[in-house]
Amino acid sequence: MEKTLYIVRHGQTDLNKRGIVQGRGMNTDLNEEGHAQAEQFYAAYKDVPFNKIYISTLKRTQQSIQGFIDKGIPYEKLSGLDELAWGVFEGQPSTPESKAAFMDLMRNWLDGNLDVKFEGGESPNEVKLRQEEALNTIMSHPEEKTVLICMHGRAMRLLMCLLTNRPLTDMDSFPHQNLVLYKVTYDGEKFEIVDFNNALHLKTASER
Image 1 (cartoon, one colour):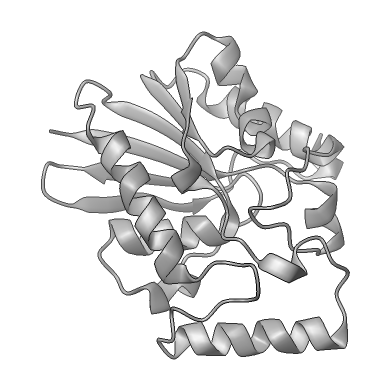
Image 2 (cartoon, helix red, strand yellow):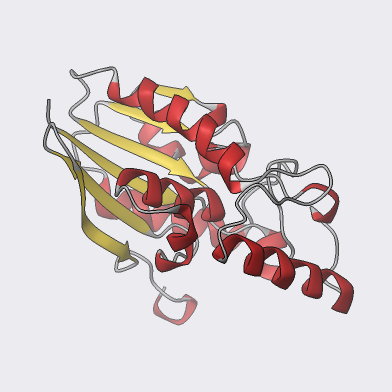
């Protein structure tokens, strides 16, 4: 079975713009820039023959690829594609204390302590479990040769590790920005990233 996955992060939200972490618990809308990014992505990839779309349960992912849904491409929401839950820090303004807490958490993760999490949040290992379930669903349809997936930043980094069989401690090897694309092929045995962190479809405000 061969399959091609187009994996994108959702477009910009106001919390993204302000540098505030959203996470799984913040069901935010795209802002004006985010909708513009969605239009740019659609314009660049509207002719790709997608058989199916998979999105998270959070509305910012559906808003990001709504143009494809409007074309009549079937879609499905999978909670396994939701963002990592940041618990008590979701939606909170950045403070010196919260910045220190995030740096400590990232150090733990990079050191291999992948069960560490904030109060009310999720660990990378917990996200991996639900991503494996989502991936099983996506890969259980061999007739869906070309698939569009819209998800979230930290979750995308973890999924890239899962697909490429790399340890989750390598998560920061996969940079991203709003509505950036990773294109991944599956040849029946392994996944391969054939388009890495592609943002060529995005234009700056001055170019629009």
